[in-house]
Amino acid sequence: MMDALSVVTQLRDLASEPQNRDVIVQDQGCLPGLVLFLDHQNTDVLFATLQTLRYLAELSPNIPTMKNELGMMVSLENLIVRQGLSVDITSLAQEVYDILTAPAIPIPRTPERERRKKPQFFINSSQKKAKSVTLHIKGLDSTDQRSLCEEALLKVRGVISFTFQMATKRCTVRIRSDLPTESLASAIAATQVLSAQQVVKNEAGEEVLVPLDASGVDVQKNVAIPDYLPEEEESPEKEVDRAISRTTAKEDSSGSWLNAAAGFLTKTFYW
Image (tube, rainbow, N blue to C red; front, top):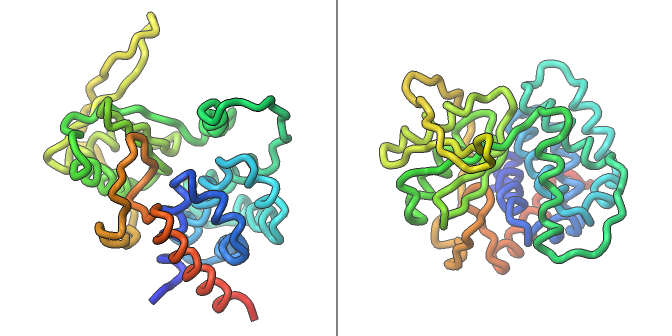
């Protein structure tokens, strides 16, 4: 049985996989449904919706469609000025709004790998409302350990997204600017099998590992953690670089689920 929170959290997880972003935006039901979710009273639905839109906006061709979607910009503006919302929601709404309203910059055709670097511009925007932290995670040796790390990071309020580089045992985490890095280390240490150090560059431009004191750090946890589809629903193919959480990115499962989600949105909001 679908509800608003389960639909939007699973859409967010699908949107975290780059190959799904075009399909979601082009679907006739998903994008209008996400716009309507921007007026939802449940703050967990609001935050997951904004995370989904942030992922979708990382694909540059999606931006005009998203910007021109009926109600999109008005709903984002209302969220930015709405009273009583958390800093997480307000800042993420502002970030999505800024991305969609940023002037288009003509660029020459480049290889796909170079084009993928473009979203990093928004991560380090001038407003500094979000930051990226690179962690070296001791014990990150298999998909089981990665799943443990994913579960730990998803519980930390203020974590927006993360990407793993399994070959180097690293995780790049995008977080709210006022979230202490030690909170991430504390959450990871709570797994009892993993530990984290921060990767920084010294004055010579060389990468060094900085110990993080995880003891006694208060970790503010998310109240609602989404329910994920069973492990057997996942694709057996594992990528070296993979975005946030377990997803159903396999073509047939994501396609069928998108159809179901679109049907839910249509029945719920269109009359």
